[in-house]
Image (cartoon, rainbow, N blue to C red):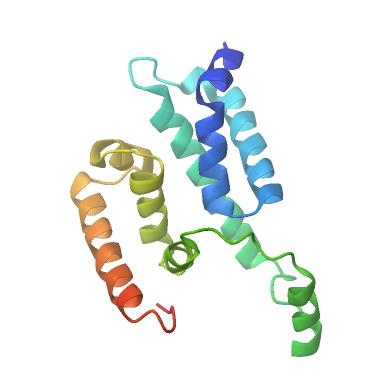
Amino acid sequence: MIDQYIRQYGKRLYGLCMTLCANRDDADDLYQDTWIKVVKNIDSYDTSKEFEPWLTRICVNTYRNGLRRLMKSPIFNGFANDDEKQAVIENVKSPEATDYSYLHEAIDKLPEKLRVTVILFYFKDMDVAATSATLGIPEGTVKSRLNKARKLLKEVLDNDTDIRF
């Protein structure tokens, strides 16, 4: 049964993982962790509802939990000095340039609630209802977050000299 879901939703889920993580290794880990959680919790899936929003919710929550763990990690900003931190940053592979890199950069700088909402709605082709169900928030909140994100992005992209929020 899980194999059928993987065949049907695997590519879209992996695309979501890549969009959330923007790093192939982290996306691979998130993809695998999501399917492990699906297998563990498949008995709690309500078959009267669509599978994809349930799957996406598991993925987004797994991603958020990973961020929380990272922020609480003692090594997250445990560099002895700025030189050590700069050396690590310089050794990180830079992402490949894309046609819309400026837009992706602006979206990545959005507050996390807005960023995840934008990714689900615009990049994963979810409508307001599906985004609402996936995030477990009211549809009005989804609309409000999208509106706020659009305003911030418009403001930043109109003044495209420096992207900050």
